[in-house]
Length: 315
Image (cartoon, rainbow, N blue to C red; front, side, top):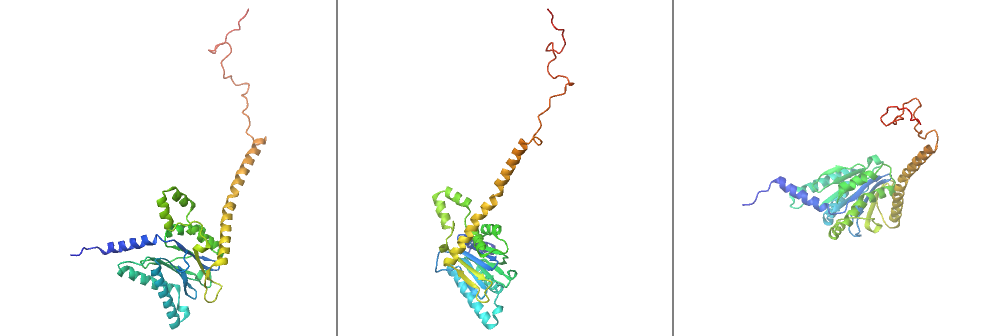
């Protein structure tokens, strides 16, 4: 007689399995900047891409198992081409593709014994920044609209919190790249705690996607360029990426020193003001005055210690 397992338990086990597997990958980010949408993914491989083009103004980014999200990417390209050919190129939208991905992943999560270990982002650049669209689709088919920026894969919540501190509207491309790199990099406190731990835990953390300062060879960077009328997607590689990395790191290194400059100035000003006030006669605290002559003395009365006056001793 087969054992009975409740549907709630089955779905919970599937969700825990997929979430634990996705948490092991490296986090990726997609964010808006003044000229379009930037996508950054740590990826040292030159043959397996996490970011690619879906259609004219639409890009695809994913993290997880390569064979699973690559099959989804090809299916999305086919769907976009057929829709644009049968109807109109303007009918191909990021929202339509995101809904199709959500239905596909939701069906796989419900019907298949093993869910897909992927998270997908579909982004579309508009004519103006207000028309930009970024959608995140998770392994269970949930789709969410992410205005401004999104982090997916790995420790997405922590990366999103760090990216929120760095993101602002109207950033340049180098500023957006610096914000993305600062968000996906492991904080110094986490690095110090990892170095203080045992060697086994440090090696496991390094295999779990812990990142220091990423180089151009370890990054996959692409943009949707708003200025282009057709085929807005393009990769950033080689000297151009090196130049942007240098600009972003120079701006990042200059920001803390600029922010820390007023602190010592205020301290020196306050010290100078205290010194000046101490040297000035008007603002210096006055010396306590001696009591008036008409006040009774506080010491023992002359003549004896009991306070009774006695005549002076004669010869």
